[in-house]
Length: 73
Image (cartoon, rainbow, N blue to C red):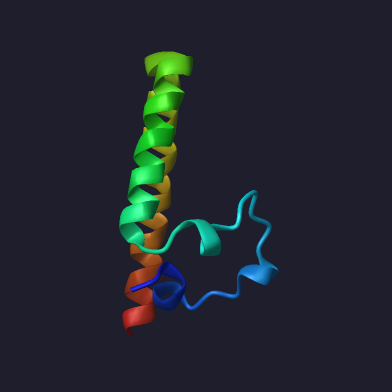
């Protein structure tokens, strides 16, 4: 299943730096890209940058859980 089929989002209204609709055919592609980006960021910016990334992702995950809960109602 393609990521765009899951999200059903209109990418034309977003301000993305890249076109994820074309780059990510499924969630595995997205996870692999994210994992590689985090590893490269850690290698270049060290553990402090990794901590910042993890903290930011934790905030986003909490927000997505709230969003998901609202959508299930």
